[in-house]
Image 1 (cartoon, rainbow, N blue to C red):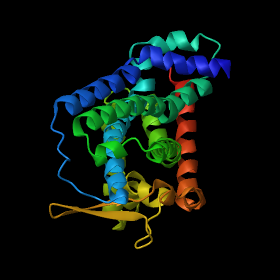
Image 2: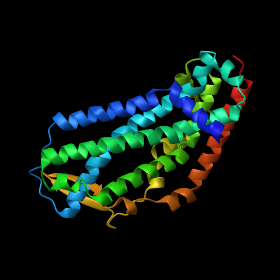
Image 3: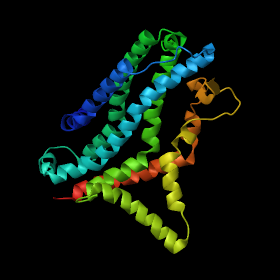
Length: 291
C-alpha cells in the first residue's frame, strides 16, 4: 500500500496539470462571477423553486469542472504509459523494485479517482466563493437560498456519487485508452479513435449490423440512464417558468440516485469485465515493451 501511494504521488509530481488546472478554472469562474452580470432580482419564485434555481446554479458551476476533468483524464490515460516510453524514462522506472501491475493500476487509479477528487475539492471551494459573491451582489431570496445546508449536502453527495459510478461505468473506455497508451508507438489519439471506428465500419460492411457502434454509443452517452432514475410525475422534477422559458430542475437529488439499479445492471458488470481485460492487456504490454 505504501508503494502504491508513492506511485500515485509520482503521478502528481510528473503531471503538474492535475493540480494546476482546477485552481485556474476556479479563479476564472470566480472572477467571471465577481465582475459579470448578476440579475436575478426580478424573479419571484416559491421556496421550492428558489431552491431548485440555486441547485441549478451550483450544479452548473460544478459541471464546468466535471467536463474539463473528463477531457484531461482522457488525455492523461492516453499519455501516461506512452510518454515514459517516448522519453525513455521507462528504463529507469523498470530498474526499481516496482511491478508493472502496480504502476499501471496506480495510473488507472489516478485517472479514475485521484484526478476527480482534486477537481471535486477545487469545485467545492470555487462554488463557495461563487455563492458568496452572488449572495453579496444579488441580495435577494435566491442568493440567500444558496446557503441551504441540505443543498450543499446534496452537492457533496452528487460529486462523490459521480466519482464512484463514473469510475465503474467508464472503466472499459479507460482500460482501452491505457492499453493504447501502452501499445502505440506514436499517434496515440488517432489509434484510440480510428481503431474502434474501423471495426464499426468493417462490421457494417461485412455483416450489415451496427452492434459495436451501438455499444460504444451507449457506453459513452448512456451513463445517466443507468446511474440515475427518472420518475415522471413522481415529484422528482420541479418545473420553473421565468419570462416564458420553461426549465426542469431536480426537486431533491436524493430521489434521482439509483445505486442499486446501477450495480444490478448487466451493462455495468459486463463493462467492468471488459475494462479489466483491457487493463490486463496494458499490464502485459508494459511488461513486454522494451523501447
